[in-house]
Image 1 (spheres, rainbow, N blue to C red):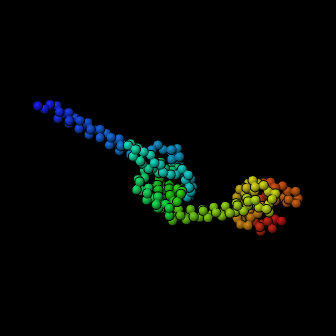
Image 2: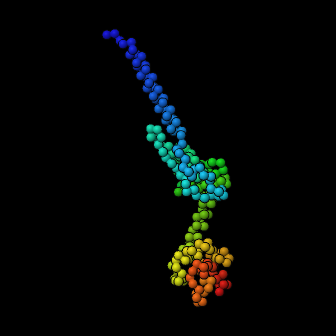
Image 3: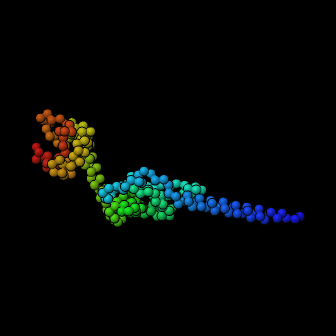
Length: 218
């Protein structure tokens, strides 16, 4: 039976069509993988002022799926548009941040560090040891302040006439320190006009004093 002379041509055209479709799909996939996700509003703001280390509540990792549902991971933060992070790099960062601060991204002078469960931003050129020292120091200060707050805002039987909300307001107003010397230890509440003279237990008639200043005042 004689062969159809159009069969080889049709087969060639079919192969070319498949090749063109494959190339188009590859180009679309490449474009989708290179295109970053939309920038949230906070990424377009300037990084926090002052430059000192502090947590960035907006910082984190975003995973999206491009063409053919290929996952992509990005880091983004305040003042930091999405930065692509490859899977192997993210895995290494995730292991390291459990024991030491690791730099996740840098944009201009601003850097973002991942340590334990938080991301910190700074723009002073800190090294990992600098970041670690400041995080630990802030935790120590926070624990000391919490202890003073608990002491002064608890239902202390020595201050039965001072409502809890009044104690909290006075403590916050005086910033947890003695109103006279600024000390932060052995603190007490003091009535400016003593209770014995009819002084009320109000925010305006109360102050925080350390024990030495309390003795001087009375």
